[in-house]
Amino acid sequence: MKPFATWLVLLLAIGAALPADAGPEGQVTWAVHVTLVPAWFEPGEAPIGTAFMVLYALHDALVKPMPGALMAPSLAESWSVSPDGLVYEFVLRKGARFHNGEPVSAEDVKFSFERYRGVDHKLLKDTVAAVDVPDPSRVRFRLKRPWPDFMTFYGGAGAAGWIVPKSYVEKVGGEGFKKAPIGAGPYKFVSFTPGVELVLEAFDGYWRKTPHVKRVVLKVVPDEATRLIALRRGEVDVAYAIRGPLAEDLRRTPGLALKPVETQITSWVYFADQWDPKSPWHDRRVRLAANHAIDRQAMNQAELLGFAKLTGSIIPSSFEFYWQSPGYAHDAVKAGQLLRDAGHPKGFDAGDYFCDAASTYLGEPVVNSLNAVGIRVRLRPIERAAFYQGWADKKYKNLIQGGNSRFGNAATRIEHLLVGGGTYAHGSYADVDGLFREQARELDPKRREATLHRIQQLVYDKAIVAPIWQLAGLNGIGPRVEESGLGLIAGYVFSAPYEDVKLKGK
Image 1 (cartoon, rainbow, N blue to C red):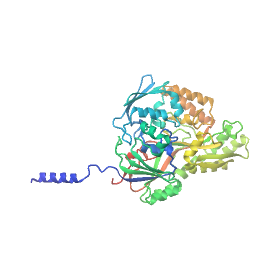
Image 2: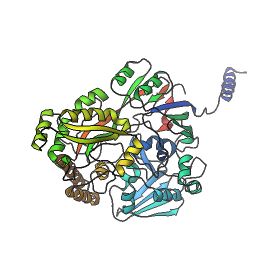
Image 3: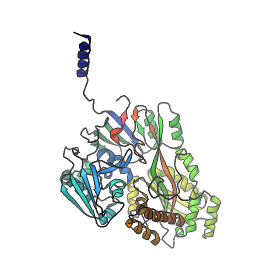
């Protein structure tokens, strides 16, 4: 046999002995800092941005934020808008299917929209006149009037565009779906143990790509020090939210890596009682005093090692229509003088300061700063899902520490907190409401930008909120991980896309 033929036979023999495709392998475990709840398995309910931690694994959307694109075609391979801005048509991706093997159809898209009850429910339902299904691969949304933010809300800010299988949901019902969800995402549901963990397994029929990792585990570890210990021991591969001295310790630990992520999460203090004439917060000087009492720079250095942005706004600096606020400088002397001018020379009892339990690291220094100038408050941490539901139900008074991680633009952030009827708005100002209605009808981007800038300036002038920062997520990465998924989607705080997560040597 000739030498070339001999080598060819050997190469063919070696190739035949190797698997054609090894497929997903191994397990990656995340230590998450919040309690997972079944409502986050359900796009129709998904109440807050944290739910996307689960949605990006289990489910898929027509259009969604992805690496390199804030509106990437997903279950829809394309979409178009009519010249009058009243009709949006989506063409579904061929071959996309749910975990039970059913193809994703236009009826599923219509069904998912019509059952949606998330935070954007009222806004979308008030704007969309009808959803039509010309054929199984196309769906049309007909609007009541041109709305420049339809795609922003439907394709990015919320979960209305995330699709569930109509036939399965109708068969098992809403509660049954949350117990055993079926989606069209890269991972299938395996099990959920409340307060302990969510276990998912790779879906090899996912249209974009087969995931690298076989099994994903989201383990609930509320205590920050315990998350770091678990990472050191190799019990988890990624630990979310490691801050302050623990982050410094992690950075010095051989084999582990600190991964800062620039996010679009903004945090602020909301003066819920400012519309009550009997409340001290009705006086702008008191709200200004609170703003000047907070030492944001010291908090940033102590908790986030200086990685946060101090933007002076509830709008992320990366968002369209963002206006750069002058901010409120830390000045305890000025805060004290403002309180005296407002008739509180000895300060006052401001009651409870409500916050998400996972954000007490932020609430504690803010409370200390307020107490130091005479605004006496008590920290009231509440588990995240319950906290945001209670806020939406308007159960809290006095001070509320808020945060928002959702995609969108300046209008999407303003709508929920600062406009009358917003999910988290306890009140509103007529000039802000009027300008918001004006910008929602404005199709010229420049004029719309000017209106949204004016709204943000009014928010600053009235001191409606006390902005704290634009968060930087600090996370720990273990030695087995080649790609954690952190930072792949611009502004997104958690790992995603999950199908891109990869272990070393796999």
